[in-house]
Image (cartoon, rainbow, N blue to C red; front, side, top):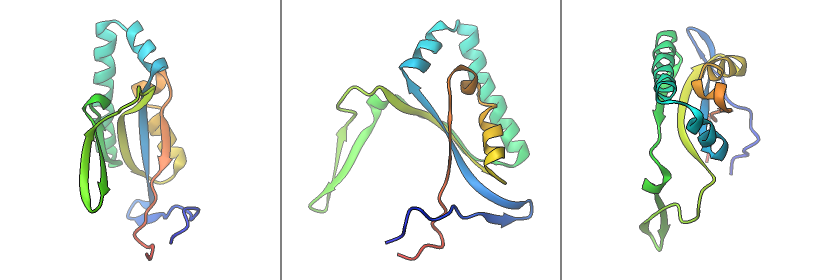
Length: 141
């Protein structure tokens, strides 16, 4: 079984060493309270800011993927019991925080990932999380 304490693998490309980072946007009571204080134009500006950032990331060649996520009430919880998949509605308990969206980027280092995360419109209103993505391609199972 692999150890999860292994260093994150850095790939080398024409641009130099590259590493994937996931920028996570959470929705929680604090972010929803801030959202409610924004007028409609400010809310639209937030969306336009995301669109502009996606274009900037694409031009820079760092964007792998970016998506907003639907409300958790539309989610399905999936498990397997006795070899059979079971899908059920979720979440069952009131969720105080959920993943609202993400950006998957491929950059040289954590400093660059943080710099891109700071450009998210959400970072000016709340906080976003930057997390390295583990490259498990070299692991033996």
